[in-house]
Length: 579
Image 1 (cartoon, rainbow, N blue to C red):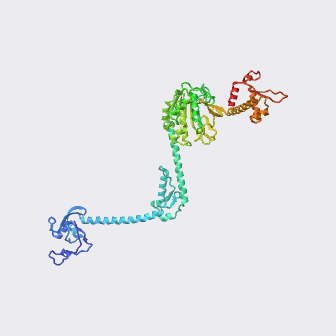
Image 2: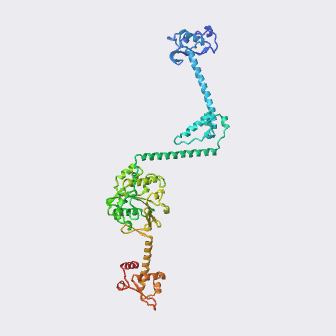
Image 3: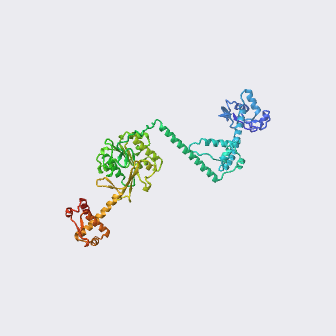
């Protein structure tokens, strides 16, 4: 089909006068009656040409007749005489074909109507967007909605209730709504203008409450999750058998270390930084495997078939071997050493499967020594102050129970303020049966005195005493009274050496002369004289009628005197004081 052009006529081929095409066909029609389109064949008939053999000057192209591909004539140089709708209708009717021109017209009308409706919708949405933007930042309280009312309020209240009833993860409960949301639910601007708006402070207060409610829900979820995990973990567990205390037979060896470590107990050793924690652990392990007294005072009692399972997270195997060899530990073969330095996560005793693996590596009846808790907590990303510390401590005690250990030693650090106890969670000191502490009497230094104390169940109570490392690389524990007595004796021996030198040089010296010669206070000089006299190294040859006359007594003379004796200890002390 070709588009009909509405020119009034066309010129004669010979250049004659114009003729009206409508008059030629005997019709008169208005522009509204004319059909803008006509079938190609009808246009050819009106031109009086044969479509199969068009004259020169006409161009045949492929066109679309009402959207259907067909051969048609496109008039490049000639005008087609327009036809009316009645003529086009008649042309189709004579051929018994559907009126494609009418169908095309109806389709165009629909397209135009749709375009008009779209334009109107765009304009309406533009107006709606302006209204929504105006009300988007205005908030109202969800609690003020009346679900009993019909319309948008009921719809909005129902939507908020559904959201708050089963909140999604990481979402907050809805306590407010905006004017935009209300309009989208059907509210009008007039209805919203009549409602009370929330002030910024009120919006903030409700936002804080929404977050608080969400946090409360999250805590409740975590609590229920822990309960579910506990219930699952409890499946298949056996309840411990009843113990009849009336017939119960206690262990024949109640102590691992007398007066300090009860058999089967948990010992917590907490030491200040560089206070000798490692040295103390070595001495504890050495006393157990070598069957000797700890600190030279407290006998140990570990079954000869048992071992000490030493799980160390701070030193390498090479360092541990060097330390224990230098300390003179004889029975190194009784130490089941496990260095977990750098692989601390393999000792996550919170996990039952991990404990099962470790329990297979530890002989029943052994003592477990774990040094140090701090490194394990760090590897497990657990803060020392976190409640998760309890899970680790419980896991350690469970391991000791599962492998039938004779005792458990847990090593950790004291806080900067030693009076506040172990660094971290309060359970660290509440968990062990016996608490042992090593503190410094000053700044960290090799010469700074170390003080050890212990307190706990089974009547354990060791008053603060000084730890001293002997030349044999073993620790000795001296009480404060013993230390004070030793200091006093050392000072007295030094004063006695000075007095002895004076009376040797000037026999029969008086007390006043001795004070002058030694430059000692009179009280100290007289005390030194009494000490020398008591050990047989000086005597007063004066009489009741004469003044004092102190003379030095040689060891041989003193030994032969029936009233005085000189011990080897006295000679040694005097010699040391003289040096």
